[in-house]
Length: 126
Image (cartoon, rainbow, N blue to C red; front, side, top):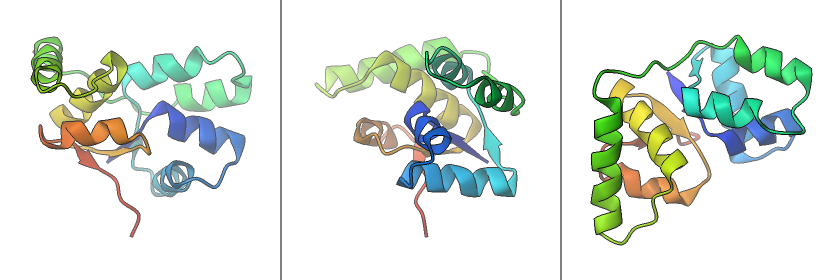
């Protein structure tokens, strides 16, 4: 199973040929895409999102949060911030949900590399 961050979804819906859009399309074709709550909120709140895209993304299976999720997010974010690493809250929420469910993350945002030391697995095209 895989998860795509918001930028991959935006590229996909815009028809861009980016790494994220290509990987996301592959996952959708294979039926392996889940959407975490934070990405769902980010995409559905995007002002220029077309209604057909909102309907499509709303039908995807969700990556559910597990007990202790919020505490693990806080702990992970604290570890990275203590090391002086960039750790935006939204990225932390996405990364932790992926780590909890052991799913791959599609993202071109290099800030996610910091979460790899905590167990995040990022999708790589073969």
